[in-house]
Length: 311
View 1 (cartoon, rainbow, N blue to C red):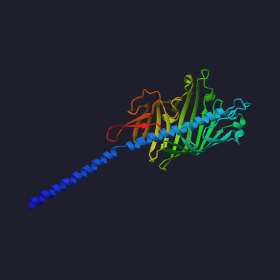
View 2: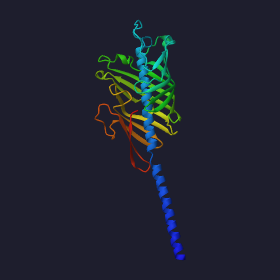
View 3: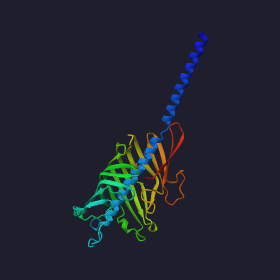
């Protein structure tokens, strides 16, 4: 009887140890899988880039369209075209200020509400947006963008500088390139899970005529090659660097890069994002790709990969 009891006790102990080991092993595997952290960082960064770059492009186009703000032919009576889903308050235009209110009707694959206020710095002293080194303050006020069911609310001021002078509307074979920089140190982002985080950005934006199919490129313009930094939706600090220029073509859409390489450093992980891939993560042969690939090394040295889709 004692022998049987000892055997039963031993078996029970072995089973208990096996269950504990399996539980610990499962916990280790779960802890090692940082895919949710890295994929969320990559997706949020891509979405924020798409939303803010669209807004900067709208600002540039709005300044170009407004003869008063751009400093072009002020005698023309042609109508000014503001973004298709916005109403413009031009009551302060003689002070270099215009406020857009977005009506939520939907436009170009996105739904927008809130406001954006544009102000040409030193307008009263004669500065116009077409001038070399002209500055434009873009103030986001509860600016909410929804794409494919995912939303983001942006607040804060962004400073655009017209480095080369000139207007995007003037791009041609005679004026093939225009450069802008954009910086923000107080951008607040509210994600669709209601988490709020602070981001900073520093980018250089280049427009090229490209034979009529306008090309738009983004490189980093911050210290140590940083293009963005702050805290993500999980509260983890991050830094983003643009390793090779992010390139978009007008024919493909400004929020769908055809090429580029980005590096995200978050929670002691470094992830490399390759833009312009197919659904398998290969560099796409399609002229207008729709995916990006994220590669990184997991906590236990395992190589991991995530394929994302442009929003």
